Image (tube, rainbow, N blue to C red; front, top):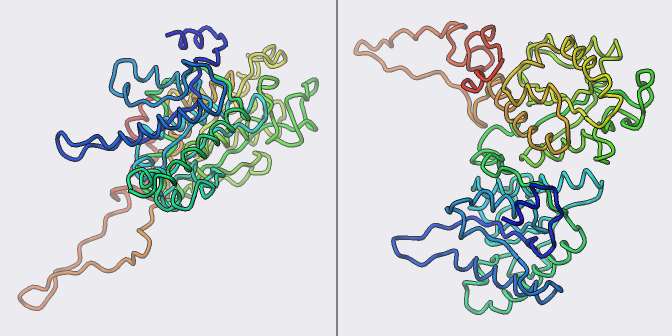
Length: 468
């Protein structure tokens, strides 16, 4: 209760109530009624890590060395306590296993911690990688989701047997006690080194029940089309060299991708913050400027990826750019959602807020009112970096669903269409071939859409949720 009230009131959390590390693992079900609890080996690892960390640091007696959620997962208030631990712990320690990456709950824990690191890193513009993975059971590299694949971590320093058998193998197999002790000690040393180097500050806890998984939908990136896990971010903003008259250059850089609307609270341009947030959702991400991309949109072609367009309201002050944005708005591309960062502490923007908001709404009337409530809220102004981190995953998910609705359908790899075989009748004659579906009666519509007539698909409002 003390921890939650401190965060709610904006107070500083004393180091003594910050968990030194958060152990994230996938629960293993018992085999048969009354069988042994397989998670007791995880508990042993947790206790051993806590003991090593107490010996390696000057943490006072009674400090909250670690956190694992076995006791509270099904208890009252578990989501609040879990959220508070993820918002305050210094290091996140995921126990890799095939079961781990199939767990939506583990993916939510990863997402919540990684989003916190992105938010803190944007404010300081310093490296904030505080995830220290451990091999519980070795996982083939091809089965790793993108957030885990991107981690730069050398497991071989923990020992050869650790790499081949994982901590579970070392703790279970006789004769490997020495290798287990070495691996756990080295893991504890690494946790301490990261905690003392990164110094990750606490943030306001997320609502853990509604955060997405960092591993994507069930089945991960291997559960669907590879292109469905690629997303493009485009930024429509000026550079410091072509600003409207009187506009301060402190929010701008050499090109649109260096636009930093949340300056000085953030020291990192919004395009790169968005890129990190999207990567944390198990996407490959690419970036570009709207000025460079203008003219590449073609609504007559099926999309190749979902997209996010980040727009500076000041961009409509340039008439040429405003006209290109208006032309973009007239094309039917529901798989592209608009996000409009807006800094309430930018005095120039606040003074012209009503005028710029009105002009942008006149320029992008379709996009400003398209899609779910979260998409409309994002298009009407995202007032802080914290709010961006909360709303962007919802906008990305809506764009991804629209992409899947409108993308070209392809047969599975290696599949060669063949003529359907027909039974031969008693006279040695086959029945006449069935008539093909007329174009308007195709079960998925033209181009693989799930609607026979796109003209009825307005993609407006919350009603779109039921169709996505």
